[in-house]
Picture 1 (cartoon, rainbow, N blue to C red):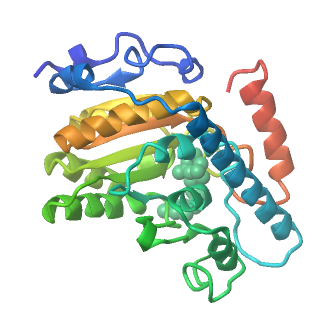
Picture 2 (spheres, protein in one colour):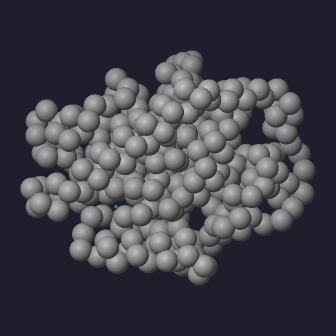
Picture 3 (spheres, rainbow, N blue to C red):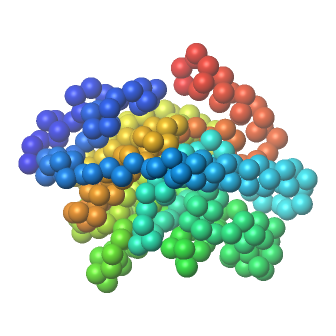
Length: 310
Ligand SMILES: Cc1ncc(C[n+]2csc(CCOP(=O)(O)OP(=O)(O)O)c2C)c(N)n1
Ligand SMILES: [Mg+2]
């Protein structure tokens, strides 16, 4: 095994430059035993029909959330409303590569994952409205969508809490000698939680079949990612501490995410070892729907899509 210095990417990946770079250069890092895996990787590109399907799924999530937002503004229900507007690619691109054996768990921003995992709009909407017909009997609300039959394990309101749970799912899969792996989403802020690091350590130590997805939208509630995080813009580099491979994906490019995630899955399926994937994305809405949201949207568009640097 080479030292970490040798394994480090030759040049640092800048937050804004992820779009550039080919699939296996810059954006992917492996401990050496993984490097041969790309030779065996055959990419199954989505057909034109499948691409249309993927687009429809993204639109479905977007409009469902916009509808949520409208209802919320009418004041019909009183709770948080965490929307994933703008992050659809990171969910559809990733989840479209999964087989029926894969399990998914996520944090508080869970609508997109819930819908793509196969939950109906009705049970999601009912949950949000606090009805007993909701997936969590109306007691969970926006952050606690669940569907065990679709292998979707939530929806968790405490930042980072889903990571030890996801690691537990991967442990169960290995222990019970079942097929598949766990896809565990987390936000960029979760990566600084202590329990997350305990889970990463155990996942690596016990060689558990899990892919940790860091959805890096450059924001926690409002604060820019740079303020709370050392290695901001490169959160996946924490994988080095746990001897895990890592990968960076452009969350604005569906094909990039699909391609790299397919590769990541092939690795985890082949070796049964964990992996960290960082998806660079933006959230067009604020942390939760509220009065400041319009200001947030303007700032995001100005700074992230305008000329000014984030
Ligand atoms: C342990 C804990 N601390 C604080 C909060 C309050 N909180 C809710 S969402 C959020 C920001 C999370 O940011 P990130 O993980 O980047 O996810 P994003 O909201 O950007 O998807 C915080 C701090 C919480 N839910 N749990
Ligand atoms: Mg964030």
